[in-house]
Structure formats: C-alpha cells, structure tokens
Amino acid sequence: MGKRNRKLAKDKAPKKIEPKKPKGLTTDAFQNVLARMGLGTPNLMEGTEYPLTRLTNDYQLMNSLYRGHWIIRKIIDTIPEDMTRNWISITTQLPPDEIRKLDKLWRVRRIRQKILQGLKWGRLYGGAAGLIMIEGHEDILHEPLDYDTIMPGSLKGLMIVDRWSGIYPNPELVDDLDDPEFGLPESYQLTLEEGQTMKVHHSRIIRFMGRELPYWEKLAEVYWGASEVEVVYDELKKRDNTSWNIAQLIFLANLRVLKMKDMDQVLSIGDERAQRDLYNTVTAQNWLMSNMGLYVLGHEDDFATHQYTFSGLNDIYESFMLDIAGACQIPVTKLFGRAPAGLNATGENDMQNYYEIVQQQQESTLGPILDKLLPIMCMSEFGAIPDDLDYIFNPIRTPDDKEVAELADKKTKSIIETYNAGLISQKIAMKELKQMSETVGMFSNITDNDIEQADDSFHQGELGFGGELDYGGFMGSETPDRTGIPQSDSTGVNKFRRILERIRRRLGNS
Image 1 (cartoon, rainbow, N blue to C red):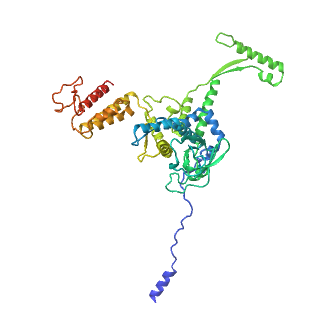
Image 2 (cartoon, one colour; image 1 turned 135 degrees about the horizontal axis):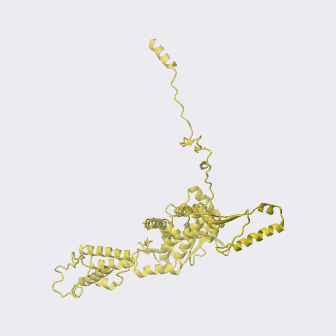
Image 3 (cartoon, one colour; image 1 turned 180 degrees about the vertical axis):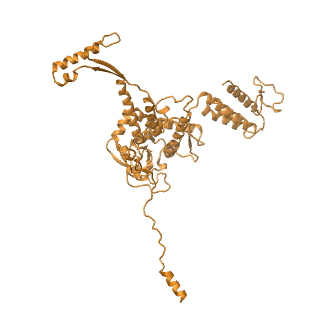
C-alpha cells in the first residue's frame, strides 16, 4: 500500500508548466523614444520611404532625357561604345582569308553598328530587339531557324526596334532545357513601319536587355529589364537642382540696396504719377552709377551692397557628381571629362575598375548575342560552321607607344628563351613573332614565305639573348656579316638569327 500511495501522490503533484514560446516574427531594432531616435519614433529619418516608381514605363521621360540631357546620353552611350570599340578576334583555325571575309561581313552589313544601337536602346528603354534578316525567310519567320536553310550570301543584317515601338513578347515561354533562352518568350509580335504585324520565332530574335530584375518585376516588365535611368534619376535631380541654384546665386552675388524715406507710402497710395517719378529717379541713379560717376542720395536715404561668397559650393556639387558616377558605374573622369582630383591622383585605378565592368558586360550581354550571330554569319558566308568556331574580346584599353614597346620586348624575349630551350622550332618561333604583329604593330614584315623556309627542327641552345649572341660551335668558321652572323646556312637558322638581331637593335633604340 505504501508504494501505491506514493505513486498516487506523485500523479497528483502539480506538473511543471513550460513557458509558452511567442509566436510570430522576432525583429531586433534600436529605439530611443525620449530622444526621438530609432525605429517608429517621430523623426525625419523615419519619414523616409522608397516607393516603387517603375520609371522605365515612362516612355516620354526616357526620350526627353536622352535628347535633352547630356549626362543621360553619356550614361547610355559610353559603356556600349567601349564594349564594341575594339570588337573581337575570331580564334578558329580558318585561313586568314576566310576570317577576313567575316570581318568584311561585319562592315558591309553594318552588323556591328546595329548591335551598338541595340545595346543603347536596351539600356535606355530597358529592352530592345534585333530581327535577323535572312533573304528568302520572309514567309517562315514564325518557324525555328534552321541553319541548313541559310543560303550563301543570304544574311542581310539586323533590324533594331525598342520594346515600345515594334516588338511585344507572346505569353508562351521556351520550355526546352537545352535552349539558351529557356524561360524567355518563345515568340514575339513584330510590327513593321507599314503597320504589318507578324509572329517571329525567338531563334530569329536577338534580345538587348536593360538592368536585370527579380522574377516578379521581370514579369511586370513583360520579360524585359529596367532602364539605366532608373538608378540615376534621383541623383540626377540632386545634381541638376544644385547646378541651377549655383547659377542663380551668381545673379545675387552683389546686391545693391537703396533705402528711401516714405517709399512704402508712395507705393501703397496708388498714385501713378508718384510711382512714375520714383521709377524715373531710380533709373537715373542706375545710369549715374559707375566707378567714375556720382550717386546722389537724400538726407535720410541710404545705399548699401551685400556680397555673397561661394565657398563650399563646389564641394557639394562634386559630391553629387560622385553619386551619379557611382550609380552608373562610370568614373567621374570619363563621365564628366574631369581631371583626376588629388595631389598624386592619376585615375588609373578608377579606369581599371571601369574596364573590368565593361569586360563583365561584354561576357554577360554581348557574348550571347555573338554566340547566336556567328554561326548564322558562317552559314551565309561559307555554307558551314567550323567545329572550333570561337572568339575572344580584344583588350578594351589601347596601350601607348611606350607600353607597346615594353610588351614587344617581353614577348620577344619569351619566344627567344623558349626557342633556346629547344621547346619550339625556328618555324614556330617565327609564327609566334608574326602573330605578335596584331597586338604590338611589329614583325608584320615576316612573310608566309619566310616562315615556310624556316627550319622545322629543334636545336637547343643555339641562340642567346644576353649581351652577345651565343653561337657555340654551330657556326664553324663562316664569315659573319655586319650583324656578326654568317650569311650562308643550309638550315636557315642564321637567317633567323639575323632577323632576331635586328629585332634586338630596334627594341634597344625604342
């Protein structure tokens, strides 16, 4: 019985009550009600809001800013122009003559200029498109593009339209996972200038996007992006208002104040003759006022000047310029044409950051466009697509003469050292020098015939690039020419040595 009573007593004992966990979202914030600081307190900072404006939809505002505001025009044009300025180099194993045909096609059909135009309208309006015009495909634009139907010489270029005046996405989306445009509209309604509307498959359309948006905002923009104007608009208003206020202050820099007895009564009684006399008096005094003139005042009148100083205004103005430059990702030195500020400032770091931004834009924006266009160009020009078709973007920055000379010196030494190590033949070394002519502007006189006649075997340690050439015992007792190298050589090595000796002398003179 004792065990049973203890068990019943244990069951009747009050259970320990666990505290209930609060439900809902827990947030941490600072608040000082007495000082009116922090979350929810009545202060100016808490009155700040960021409403969703979607300025991209204001077509007239975009047109007005681009036509009438030089800063907006530079923001829209600068990055696309730098993206396409030095263009690309085709890296396929096609012969040089065939690659030159592609380069000519860019120029003749003005494809490069059309791509630049599409990039600009994409940044301004948040979206633009280019129709790939192929002769003979006018009646099958609604069908997917088949490369086998592209006849030689049928590519006629691009027709660029912006998102507001010529093209509208259809609701169906691309559902093929292998398609690079998966999740984007499958087709578009294209409106021509004559008012004719046609359905165009997405494989025949090149998209130019503005700034990328989150999913729901992309849906609100019908699968287009946002205009570049949206991110700089508020900063632009600050800069413009500051600039206009500074201009207005110039008119107030030197105020002249004339105190006249009973002037308020003259103006208040409405006597036109008295007011006219007052006006004539002030006008006459303005005519008399000069460095050599005499200013006449009444006994109880007074004259004073108030001058305004402009110290500190330039710092405020430049801070707004910095905000605009940061918003559009373009350095102040390039956007506003200003010299770098500071005692030792050169602007090189800013420009290097800018070049990296442009390179990123090339890869993410221009790359997909070229990936779609190049196969079509090859089919139109050659009737086939090379298996190794590829390209690289040429450097954005153009080096000066000193940098080119240093680059040529370093590359030439690397080629010669590799040749001396026996890792490459004379023929390969000359090919490398020939290829350098595209970047350094030197060695362009090495002809294909010179390369064919060069030795194709490997000879380790035959050529030195120190103070004197190291010929070893290879030369024998042949008589050298004025370069110190024998003329005759059945293998052609001495000819290569003479070329490299002239290269050394040229680099030494530069």
